[in-house]
Image (tube, rainbow, N blue to C red; front, side, top):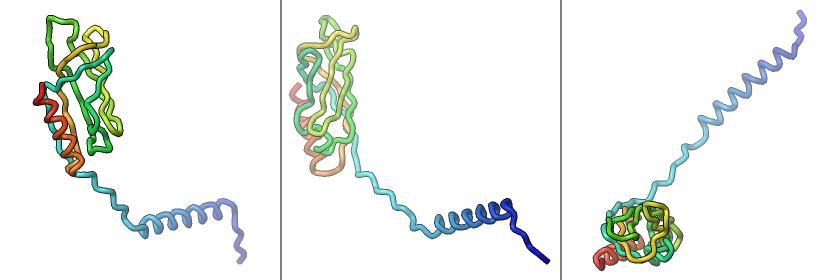
Length: 143
């Protein structure tokens, strides 16, 4: 009895062989261990005084990613009226050494002058992160 190989039989055999190899490779690879995220803590600071010039301000040196800060979100606190310096929007940009702020009035005009802001900050639970928290805590108690 003669046996002839058609291209369909060869293609099916190759597909089955490749599927078996893929299953074997998947099962034999070691489990990938994901890196644990750093332990973090979240702090809320109220009434931090900043003095933007043409809307530009900073939370100061030591409030960036190199200092253990993982995230910052800020909003305006005061004054709430009676002046054109109402901080209607606060855009926070987390940099490597400091957090930069853009303080904008409710109508889109940049704020110039002293205002108070509130910030939520997430930091690593490390000496660096603790240092950043202490700097922000001191700034909030000054105002």
